[in-house]
Image 1 (cartoon, rainbow over the protein chains, first blue to last red):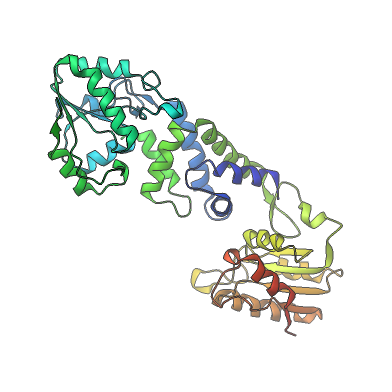
Image 2: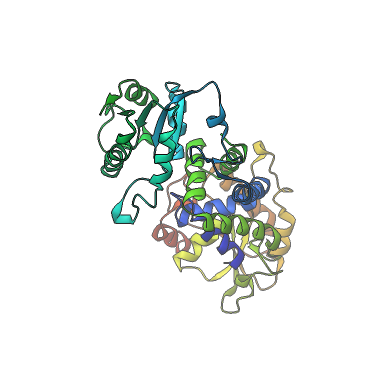
Length: 197
Length: 197
């Protein structure tokens, strides 16, 4: 097989859930059926890395110093929801049950993978929680072992700020991840959040 | 959501089998976990369109005028296997049951989709089949309605060349496609091909 084509197939394998067979199909599909889509994809990827940075306030990917969501005056700036991943934010927004602000950890504590408080930049989280507008901190890490441990760590970390700290309700089956939950279940978990301090 | 990020998600949807949810996952995965893989992918795509052309002999994608497979002196140049897609060629090679040459149609006759003999460049196929080295033409289009119709058309087209024309054995279930067959079944279909003129 042509080296250039082989390189294309190999590089497609970096996508999550794409193995050798799918990568081959995708490569030929792009070459034969969708050259414009393919070039567009290449440029979008390069553009993303050129233009996207992280919001100073919530950590989400954005093109500006502070993202639109954090700047949105219509949102309730007295509540801060701490989540693991940007995809979790999308799920929360889809429930239309939360109009406060977010803080994205970009991961969870996982000592076995070498991810500790320093790697997750817990200092930034603490600084963010200090904000005098914030009256309630909602912890919405996943209901996995790592997510629960992260929740416990954050509770300890911010308890001296004397703010209300809550955890979204464990309405979802233990071990499941927020990203894959149906919005109804997640909406219930937000409304039934339980005070833990 | 950031426009740049949204563009990335939208452009990932051009990949076959990738819907909104997968595209979102892929976008965040690339940004968070695999920036190098992502840039590599972008460059591979751009490179492919810059460097890849079509082999003058077999129609496959390659960087040179004639591809390595067509130039390979160790292959049997008296047999020409006509297939629909480059992925079919990969399947044939994986069976290790065929060492002749190929001609890739890059599609099949499908009047409803506006693909007729002209769109598939049947003239080029005819010119290729005229080659005096070629003694047998194996038709290996898919066993679908369109593939069978294409096979019939090609049989008519090349019958005045007075060469042996064969069709790989219908050992596979009717309606199935070569790309998804297991290699054992396909190997049998090659060895049991049936003379049809």
